[in-house]
Amino acid sequence: QLQASGGGLVQAGGSLKLSCVVSGRTLNWYTMGWFRQAPGKEREFVAAISWSGADTLYKDSVKGRFTISRDNAKNTVYLQMNMLKPEDTAAYYCAARADILSADKGRYDYWGQGTQVTVSS
Image (cartoon, rainbow, N blue to C red; front, side, top):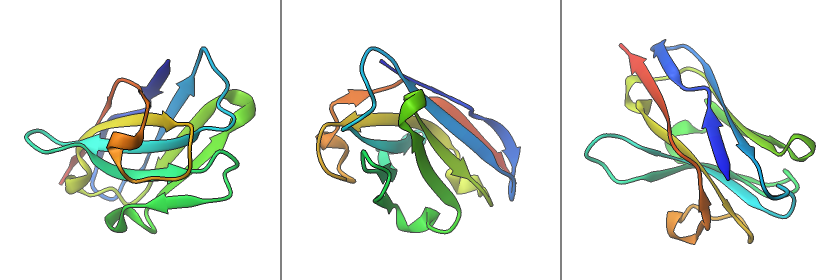
């Protein structure tokens, strides 16, 4: 089970840190990803991190603003979001897959519920 939290309402230029706690299995060996879905739009890739944390992958529009990290001892993955923009407004979902990094949502096996991020202008 994946439990995402940390969403909220923030002004443009502000920051939020999302957390995703994994229960029922160890986080080790799993690639973890963050995706987002705005109303009326498809769910899209945001960031992913390899099981060791050595490799990361980002959507171009969040590079330099968002940072994905993980603490396997705490079974938790994070998404630090800085310099937020109104276009970042969406429900954010964490996901896991037992394979290499991927930006393809269809390749993720486990999903958490979303946490809403709203950025006001």
